Image (cartoon, rainbow over all chains, first blue to last red; front, side):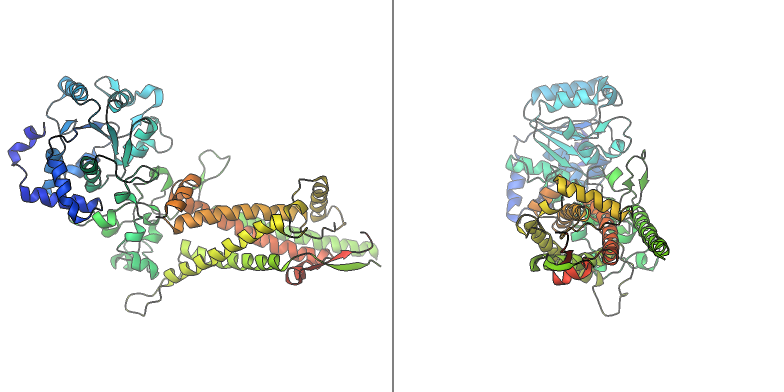
Length: 358
Length: 217
């Protein structure tokens, strides 16, 4: 399939191939001596095929891979991993496409890597996402059960993403909630950095095992450190220079975005180091705070995006969200009023007592 | 004429705990609020550097470790301190403590004039102190999770207790307000007890000694 689509654009040159291998090796945090090993693994004819499933998502993760300004990445993914099924990229459609899926699953049973992009609907039997008459839930269970390993790409596939945000009308969940008996890696992000997607796949190809994972099953080479600790604006934070509002003098000078709600201090990702689109851009570099898109439930927990802390759910109230500041100030005020009332009562009592004695 | 005698209640270690705890809370609240909302801007480019945020954070972390040490000392004293310092003296788990708890509440509500002679903590205060100690553990774990984002030990605990760093940050900030409210009420009630009671409760945390009625016991 990949040959069919890309042969017309020319084959990958060896020089470009090695360049891409080097970038990937660096992205995985491996030393330069490993480049040969990575290149050998990628060229090996025994490399495991990939079946790429799309569920409830915007295809932004595939876009992030393919629209990278470095064309090598797009060609690399098609040349290095044998992509057997990818709804966006494949030439086949409709019934033919479904036949390809069935045939590839059968042919590579127990050997292929199942990449999932998008969340899975679970409410009402999963009817909110259907492909070829089958629900996403059925397809995932069917395909993943025969895969060697599952890689969830993007925040939707990892944690449910935007459609899992409160009140989650379709019961969207990430792959990890459904597939519990298969090795799983989460590569979150909205979209994830293409090098993290490729790095994960190539790591499995090269070493035949998973990279080191954190508690949310994210590869540590991409999600082991917080954005804040690697940020180019960090010196401004330490020096106390902040953007007070968008467009002010501090913003023009590139100061720290902490006070306008940057979630870099609580988000694990390598965006400041690897960056996007091969031209060195990333949100904070472009003057917008981090939204924390690689963290679980970021649509609920990182909101409001332009404030430091999330809302506080007031117990008892239905969906009432308040600011921690406000709750705290009200509590402090109430305590002060209580103390004043208590002290006044004490004074009144003493006076009354004295009058009685007289 | 009522007769009083002076007895030793608080050991040196408990008094050291109290002041380490109190002063570290004051420092942590001030520096912590600054870290949450850096109200004073640092110098603009071209002026000598101050690293105000970096230094505030350093003070916050030092005070944090003093706070941790103080909490560990208090937990030790809960089990191995003198008889006034042990949890058995003030937690309402015995009929005696429970009766005293009700008497204290009545006294605080001006419903009774009788000042219960506790010696150590009254059960109401003691229970609140115990709750604050437990909340301190929450503050310590959320704080260390935020401070050591790459340590597998603290990240493991942090994710088990709080989930993401953002949730830990919210917990850490929210309980800052609880400590603030606690401090306010604590200082008020101690002064109130000093006026209405006869134990000389304020000076007891310096001298370790309280006055108790000698004709009743």
